[in-house]
Amino acid sequence: MILRMIHYSNFIQGQFVESTHGNVITVINPATGEAISTIPDSSDEEVAAAVNAAEVAQPEWAALPAVARAKQLHVLADTIRAQVEPLARVITEEQGKTLPLARVEVNFTADYIDYMAEWGRRIEGEIIESDRPKENIFLFHKPIGVVAGILPWNFPFFLIARKLAPALLTGNAIVLKPSEETPNNAFEFCKLLAETEIPAGLVNMVSGSGAGAGRALTENAKVGLISFTGSVDTGSRIMQTAAQHMTRVNLELGGKAPAIVTKNADLDLATTAIQASRVINSGQVCNCAERIYVQRDVAEAFTEKLVEKMNAARFGNPLEDETVDYGPMVNQAGFDKVMALLESAVNDGAQVLCGGKRGADTSGYYIEPTVVANCTQAMDIVQSEIFGPVIPIIVFDEIDEALAMANDTEYGLTSSVFSTDINEAMNCVEALKFGETYVNREHFEAMQGYHAGWRKSGIGGADGKHGLYEFMQTQVVYLQRS
Ligand code: NAD
Image 1 (cartoon, rainbow, N blue to C red):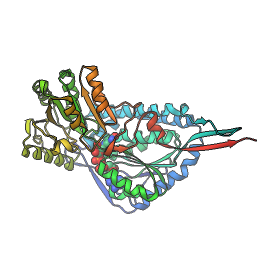
Image 2: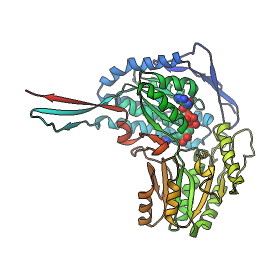
Image 3: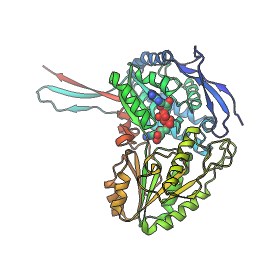
Image 4: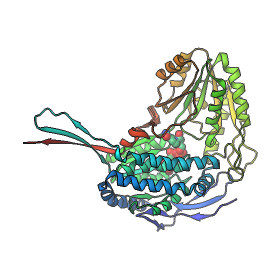
């Protein structure tokens, strides 16, 4: 069922601007394979126009008290809340997540904007003791100027807020580039700005390919900070481009989260959390458990429970059936990657305990909920990000063995431990080399935390005070009195 076939235009200087060259990208509903919209494949000139508009709008915005900027963010949050259902449907149609999850994403986005706006009265500088008499040293936090926000497809609407809200609250302007897989919700977002008094040019949206519009944005010398969420490969390319102008980067990249389940774990809790982790958004979540290390004493009982829960997960077209647990993979490439990892694991001796195949409805990119046992640390399925409803299991004897395998990865985003023994759990936490660790809970971060990957999972982070301050630069002032 096609909701509509629509053409979107770039949003520059407060207007939807038709592209002059006519090159477009077609957006597909991954549940049906149907084309649902076209978007501009923006030229370098169009991207430059968006950056110029941001550069012009920024100083006046920065001159406002932070609390006045915050007021407009609160208006934006309320505007989003008034449109939850239509926005959720747009997200589901282009990305494939379930409608309940899309509604959560939209509401969470509004809450996130409110949360960041609440910092309007809380940003603090410093007064530093001087070596000299009659001198004060002040440290101010200042806006950077123009921020480029480059977005992935897995939580496309929320990621707009994760970049825009801290950027605007701290006095920056922003140019966003949505993923070419999920641009529709981003252009729908731009329509909501009309309900606010956020000035024209402060928020701009340009669509296009990564190699085209994405590259042009990161090459632009007027951009002061590139805030990027996406894959490690793209993050590495962006860093190389950013080096040309010494542009600051904030990179939220991929993960390969280990979950350690010890013999002291509450197995019901562990299997529920891990199943949810693999099923939510079809397993396409950066911080969710991607590989399980389970202690031999409980391996059989754990695996039995996990297989039972994975088998119970229902998938299908999320716009036709609101009760499915998950929808399709976002595209053919994502589908192919998961199937290739599964095939290589089986060739190397792994055993598929449930699932492992394409869903019967081949009009969408569906994959059955899958548990893979007899895995070894060297397998690709244990080393590479899966991003699908598939979970590999490795059995261990001693905790140190599990910790060594958990840390044996080029990623460092999240990790988790399941143990009711607080000493054991905290000893694991101390040894795990990851930016985020969940103990006896599901894999999801809070907006007041700090989501930041180690190693190849990123540079800098998002959320909370520490994420907010990354959108500012410091100025130290020495005031010598006579
Ligand atoms: P991706 O890297 O393929 O694309 C992300 C964005 O970068 C898209 O908008 C794309 O057009 C753009 N892009 C591609 N090449 C570019 C270039 N050379 N210059 C500038 N921009 C370019 O990632 P994806 O497939 O959209 O997202 C999935 C990945 O994102 C996964 O690896 C996932 O783990 C990661 N992710 C991380 C977090 C986090 O918080 N750490 C959150 C969500 C997703």
